[in-house]
Length: 126
Image (tube, rainbow, N blue to C red; front, side, top):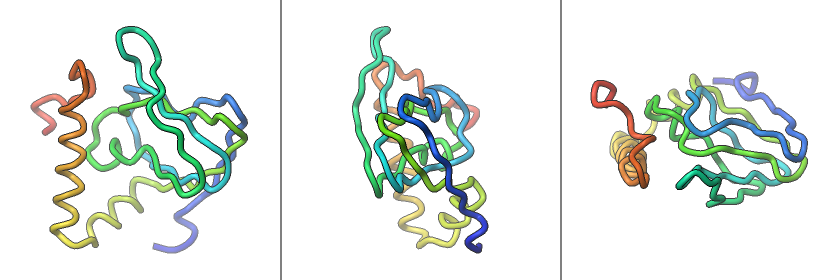
């Protein structure tokens, strides 16, 4: 993997980066700015995290192929490093097998803990 596998992208304040429930093929690393993560609970959007430089988001969908668990919105002008599915999976594949299994277990446990189960992967995909 070389530097060309990473691209940068700018999102103006207020721009939705991705929406809860969408398929995800990329993860993101915040280089500058801030991103808010929220999810719909009882019909209302509930923010649960705010990420600044160094924050990573969008990784769960890339790890297990499930839907996005949240909506990500730039709350300031934001620059991110886009981490492609290919790069992310390569990094996982070359990681220590114990750490790789632990990451997958964490993602599965997080999906199972969603309040209404709406973001769980169908049994046929587990």
